[in-house]
Length: 183
Image (cartoon, rainbow, N blue to C red; front, side, top):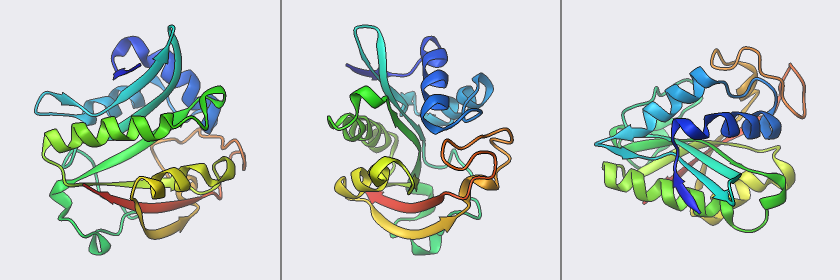
């Protein structure tokens, strides 16, 4: 069952996010800010997937005009004006639920919410080193187009100063694939 995220899900989301992406990836303050940026016109664009009270995954998404376009973005290459572009912040699926299309379903829910908010596209920085490059593969399958690759993306961020990558440790050299999904 896919439902809108609420404060009641925060502990589970933080635990799963830190397990999959690395310690320090999410905390209560950061998650609350992310979810707040996902609301626009009374519509929430952040979702969780649960089965029998077990969190299987989550999708965190910023509404258009409610996130900062930073040096890791290439808006001159986007086919949609920035004011109509949401940001797909994070899609995370528990290991036991992978390979069943859950990530794509969570994305569909966020796309539907972004459309209702007035967005025409969403940008994301996909973790190229994800297991079997699954992040880039699922986003490409959904229609995402590669804009640019950004090496060391998560090594230079004030958002996660204590982040410890599950692959690289505290000196993350993973690459972010900046991808645009239009709808």
